[in-house]
Length: 189
Image (cartoon, rainbow, N blue to C red; front, side, top):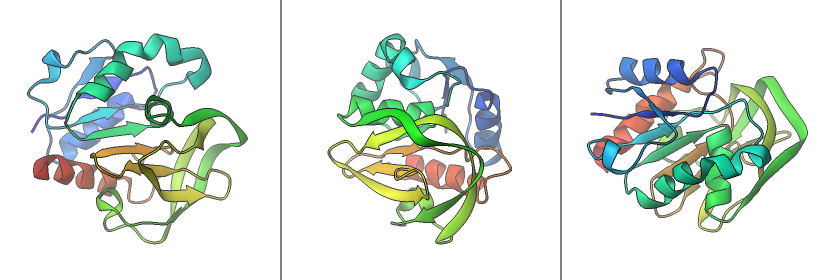
């Protein structure tokens, strides 16, 4: 099963592809200019984070934004991509009142398929100045932290997920489980 990772320039994007391979998917980094035709054999798509601020990058991500709206396969957006998904679907993202760096306690509100097997509270690795400020229509909050009200979100009708923290790093408890869950979601879709 092919699940490409869109490289938005984040330091952990290579790690995402490695974790996907470890949990049984075929994966490779692809550029942000990737088209629907170029990923027609993919069963899912992960969009990695990036070092940029969402406000300064939104205009540069128009091709990726169009792709997210067009494709019918499961999508997992991490960090910057989580914020981009919120904006694409009508929510807001911008400067966090309290940026998060390092270990963060995450509280699970709803155990959806992406959080299957997670405890009610776990520690995740965060690295962000921006966050989702208002949830888009047709999305629900699955997890939150003390300072970030939208750590994990999901579209209510489509297999589209956004995650503010970094499940791909070893500092995130159960992070590999999130990728296992995403692969299962892709298999079932």
